[in-house]
Length: 432
Image: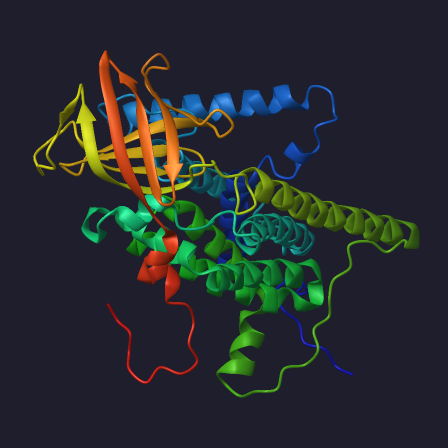
């Protein structure tokens, strides 16, 4: 049976192909490194090497931001929860600059080399395993509904127009476990397909499809992971590029595509066995850590995490301060409109629609509630409470004022978004 050749098996590459490979090798390496070495935490001194590497990159970004890009302020260093900070963009600028310089020098020094078949093989392997790791991480966090858990009580109260675009998208995903898990399974399947070289093309197609969709969502809803989702999409395209001719012949030109000859990593049997053994260990480790971590995550902050005894939404019907009943005026900044208690924090909504975010500690045995300021742990609203059916009465003090707050608990099931459910048959659209 005859076989088809792609770039990875050709003996002589075009000059443009060699230059492009050098460029993408350097660019992807700079974005991926120190993967996979940061997983090897047992090697003494390795952490110091990575610290030196990261410190060097930080200093280079600071210098480039100040002297090349003329950024008039100090670059923020350290995690902020955003992947699209000024520092991230400066890092990509520095990476591209280093890539171009390195590609030029490499092309001058190594101009006689006819191909990079072996280096391409190992580069694709590195990119494959980086994507496998990333797809599993994102995929399992969705499959176990950790990245998008469930609509919080505060989300059910906030008006539509007061949500941020990112908050809107987050609520869209959190509403449906089915769609969230579907998205996660797609990422996991993409990662599984990348494990095997014979299914790498299919896996890369799935990575491109899934991550480009994520990239467009990030672009459309101003979610600060635009750079990273774009990079993952580029990695998927990189895996497809060596087979682009066969892909076009099969899907577009309706031409025959012959079986592909897969290049070998090793020729010796012992090395092949060792490589397969390491692969099994690595993949097993990735499955175990992601599944075990997701199960624990469910218990700690996911849907199985413990809820406060007062978890819920409380509509304030009567607000008494120092024996004076405060009328429910919409301009009032003191009177409560609602008390909203979620899993990890609570909110007081005042009559003028201001939300005060607080830490919450409830002792259901003694029926005590403490609402603690995030900015000042000594700033505490202390209450005792009693319950009469759906009526909750809170009595306590705050800043020398005696407060009595009568509330009625509003169940989550009272919201159409929660109680509507799924219907195979809809005689009329239910669009509110």
